[in-house]
Image (cartoon, rainbow, N blue to C red; front, side):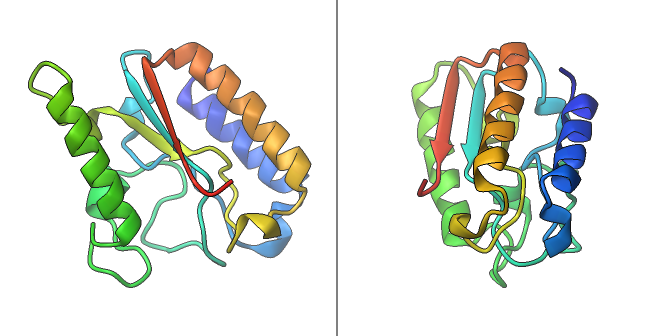
Length: 157
């Protein structure tokens, strides 16, 4: 599965699972789309995008200027200063220090949302069972293509 196929599946599920009626939008990658590659060793999957509505400055498909954890402003914080962004930055610094070679892994890794559909909290996810099932199947296909060496998941659920 390539990037465009994945995005097409997400877009179709957004409408067919009833997410569009809430107008919250969806978001897929938190990195550049070039990291959606079989050369990518590390995948970070966050639970799902939060909030009631999309930020017009944040693209829904992928980040043009590098990792969202370094380049975007979240919850009215300065860019890269949201507590979650700082935690992810620290995690990737520690990983970079423990992996041989001269790596800045936060730039080389694929970071995305496991469930791409936006909700203010996971309990308010429309068609929750079907949305999770869709996400499981999507990521099975993606991960069989990418075959990373390490998968990191974060979120409360």
